[in-house]
Image 1 (cartoon, rainbow, N blue to C red):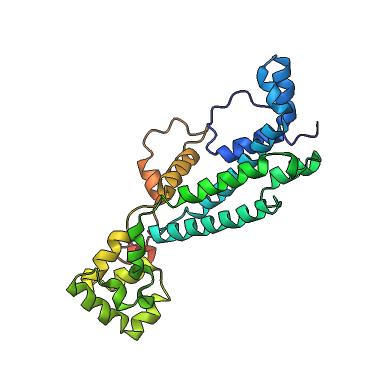
Image 2: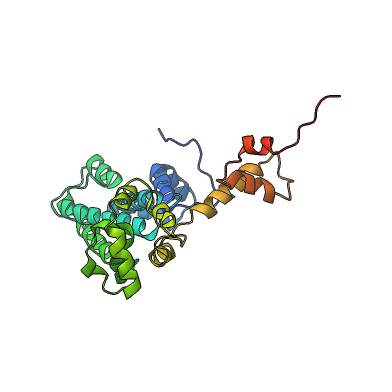
Length: 278
């Protein structure tokens, strides 16, 4: 049947972690699934003869794929809430673009949906899918704005320190405003700010501007992603493979695999007393 998969797994011990991937797999195997449901005399087989239902399925696979890409871009080390907000704002702008394109009759940004319409000679005017997609994108746009509090915009002095005017930090106390005035007047620090990650910058100036540094780090330190947990889980599954499944104490192995500390071997060797040969 020209399917990319030679078999349909009826059971899997590993849970699908991504709705987008499971929907894409279902679309790829829709002909095989239809045959299976028909053989089982299941009423669900009727859905696979419904063009509108299949179009909804295609759209869900497309939009979840977009969301997965956004979530993936938010993962990684040294991710803070300002970076996440920027990613989310970019995604909202894309939603607005997609909505306008769909309203004009273009579905090229949703490949599964577009391909199904073209391959089945379906006219966009003959289906309700365009209206459904536009309404869903509108709801997504509203929903995305709920993820971040409104007061995050008042904290822009942390990541755009030398672009913020003094009037924009009136909510800070007197001592913090004085430190900010000194900090933004330092041309050397202005250059340094453009050379290092924002969290490193605030750590470096802690001794000179302790109040501002503490306030900034309180916003930058919280873990904003599940990257560390997922990295640990992936490392654990790699360590405890089927050939080493009996391992019990893996704490030291995990610590060694996950640490970002690089041992100074030369320093360790220099401080180790050598043993002359006898």
